[in-house]
Length: 190
Ligand code: 5GP
Image (cartoon, rainbow, N blue to C red; front, side, top):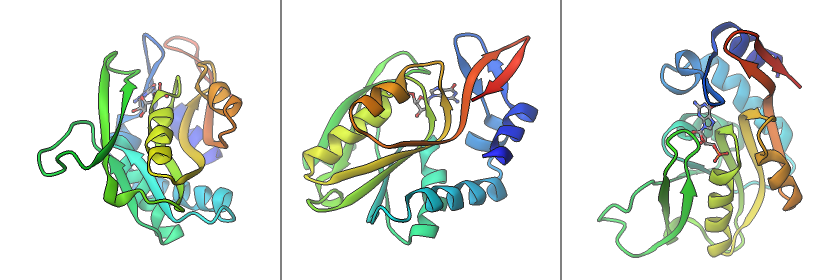
């Protein structure tokens, strides 16, 4: 998606360790017009997949998921990163390794919100090694639902997440695919 690539070129900041910062328009301050265009594109890509629900992970995926859901007219559920007391024990859970923080965290979703027969689209802001999507897939399968695919805003294709997910038969659609990035040499897209 050229609009997103152009914005990443203009405002993205490449950090050491393979981290791209997009805080000024995607996941801290949010450009809503850009989000709307991304939501429309996810709808174009997955409109024939009979999506009944969108699942994402807190925090950065929530905004993109909500805007996307406006085009599908389906609910959004977000996995929480810690067990809150009001969710108690009635949850599906999975352990996810965080690429940006370098630690493991348990994500949970209430059993009320993942049901057998549902067709679930996963939406997230970044795809690096694929741990977040795999954790969400695990939760979807625990609930007897079907993962129809993963819609990703920014895929870093120099990391192995996309290949690993596709080898598992998961449909991955990324709006921008960063092939390489360097603090001095800039960003290249596929
Ligand atoms: P994965 O689970 O695929 O290894 O990493 C995806 C998750 O890590 C995303 O939910 C995102 O929050 C975070 N992430 C991975 N790489 C980056 C990055 O380069 N920049 C930012 N801002 N977040 C990232």
